Image (cartoon, rainbow, N blue to C red; front, side, top):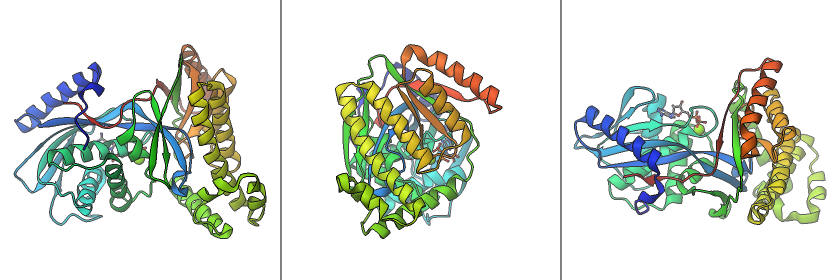
Length: 396
Ligand code: ADP
Ligand code: MG
């Protein structure tokens, strides 16, 4: 892992770490050897592009999973979750997908995946505490995986490149937990940087930090509380449709459409199936929007960033068909109410909407959202503002 980055941890983080350390001593009767942290994330733009070899632009949230850890002489990794008040034991021997279930599958998956990559670990005791809301689409799972991964690799003396570690954590979630996610969440949890978004090119495996010159703006993250309908099945269907569209176009992935330039409409028109045509158009235009947002951010042009966010949302509604009534309403209230722009973020079918908003307007917009949702008879949404925070690091 990287050199311990003590400067990245602020006062709040140090207080959290102290309390976690106290918990650790009470529970295991000794001091932890170290404390590590890894954040959840929000994707600014670049949706449903990661599994198409494309471009994404997430940033790390101030919400994170924190892990206190020390090695032990046993043949198991014990993990206590402060959030759940539960301790689980992951045996080091005989570990295989399916052998551990429930939330224990996440730490077990990381231990297994590290071993698969040649970074074996020994017995250890971990205490985990997370401020990332679970199941809200802010990637509490990647935060947990990455925090456990950085803790275990450092504890057992493995120097692993952060991007490789992200891929190990992704493999853990794909192959062990059984969730076919792309690498975006783990990548940004590992590589995120304060006041930067991370433009990641999946095809090239290349991360570029783009300064988020926000002036007085922040991202308002709105959890619409819409029940996740159909999300697993529809997500799998979208992946399948993209594969089918790429196959019909004779390209290895829809990412290749990015270089089509003015030939794009003609290429898309050659797809007979209108659904595949729409899916392909979303992916092609969304990759273009990521590049455009990087340029707009570099110029500090928040209006332009907002316009691309609105266009992304329209594309996710019309072409990718992953919005629901709640996410439509949230986007509309934000876009019409003074945000630079707003869009659904994450896989869709519920989940979160983000707005790029002037910070002084955030509170008013959150209240307007509450009113509009009450009028529509929807559950009360929850909202918070965030600017990009630090990725995985050692706190002490
Ligand atoms: P998301 O990643 O969007 O939050 P997921 O369903 O992918 O949603 O991951 C949530 C799951 O991750 C939880 O159901 C739980 O199993 C596990 N998890 C996340 N945070 C914790 C935690 N602090 N303690 C125990 N398990 C956790
Ligand atoms: Mg997840």
